Image 1: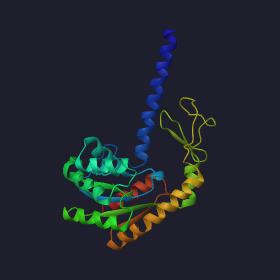
Image 2: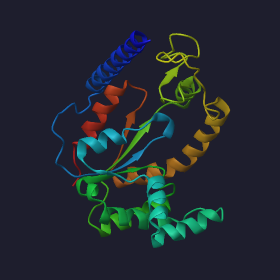
Image 3: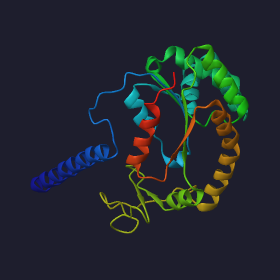
Image 4: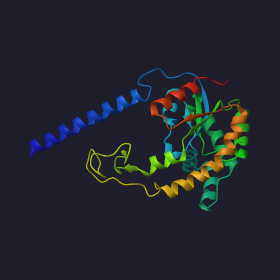
Length: 259
């Protein structure tokens, strides 16, 4: 029995080693920092993208040593800390209402004042602002702190291509490993390559649900994009490109600072 356990542990160590090597190679291929010096320049940006695209935010955060102002995270943090804004937001959410623009912008302002990571700048994901009014309110607050947005970067992809990508997505629940029926299929149908356990497809990863989300997304996003285009800070990146090229394009935009 001891020999079997030793062999199992040896195989686990091999798998761990392979996974670490693969991760390092992926980071190198995608243009990851890989030990390269981080930027000392402040970055102030709005990232307009779909959740289904994944996000560039973690890589930007690492590269520029800045904070990630995710609205959901801020709401949960403020509610947990029982701040005045958090208590007000919880009362509204418990009643089934939508948290007001003033509360959300107030949370962003507080985060900029108290989060040490924000000294290096900030990335704000484009779930907020959803309207031109929200964009104007956010801009007014940021300008009052002399930290206006430098960039509004939109990741663009054709709807039909995104639907094809997402509807073929397969997930291994316990590890989070993802596959795709066409672009990255598992070695064995509907089974995880590492454990052999069943893969699943998320209930909302179906064409009809995604198409409805896209209609809402475009309806909300188009006026906001026009607002930032007129402000002269909007730029677009083709998200259908290889991940490494998307990252290179992102760096090209962000390293061309707008003071």
